[in-house]
Image 1 (cartoon, rainbow, N blue to C red):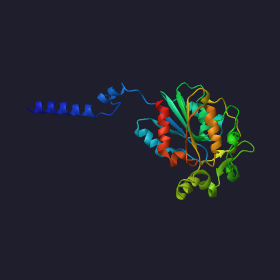
Image 2: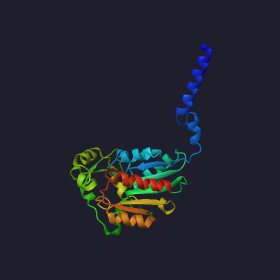
Image 3: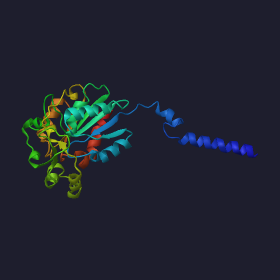
Image 4: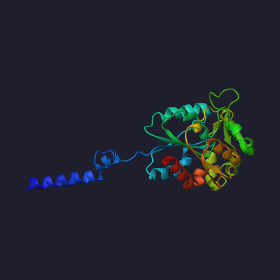
Length: 271
């Protein structure tokens, strides 16, 4: 009798394990997953004066929709160097990738994705999408717009900097009104204190062959942007042939309008 009860208990335990085993554990869930189409990995690339934490809400919502998400840490040294770093990073990811760039991060994905058959789409969130030979500073002049951000930079030396180069920060006294005017003052204040600087030379370094020439792209124009002129954003989006939307947002649309940004990325990932 005891032996029979033991066999029943073992059978029940095995059934429970099979029913609730997580994907990849070898239970039925793992078998079922093999019949589903794998979703692309979403790689989120921040720009200068920011870090990966700006993607927190967007990342959470994409993950809840079943997308693998990586918030890439951008070195902020220049389009060529950062593009190469991201290109090598992408080589470690299996399957398709959707690259999303904010601000200067757009220049990085533009360089990193060129010639990579695994990058299925590019998404620019108030970002630079430079042409070959064009610098970030030159792209700001497209469409006749204007930005005053270069008038409010604080420069600090960094080890190993080439002659004349330095790390550039936005003056904290100007950060809220220039970078994130539609966020609470306290939130922008912490962002100013935590901002990661970009090399000043990154503003004038020519970009390489643009990935948007061969890879489909999506673009969000931030109509209240005070870092990249909205006119320049529209011009870059048009030149790249991007599927484009425009919203009333500051430069940090992924923080102030995470629902819109998440929906745009999903569209690019599903297309």
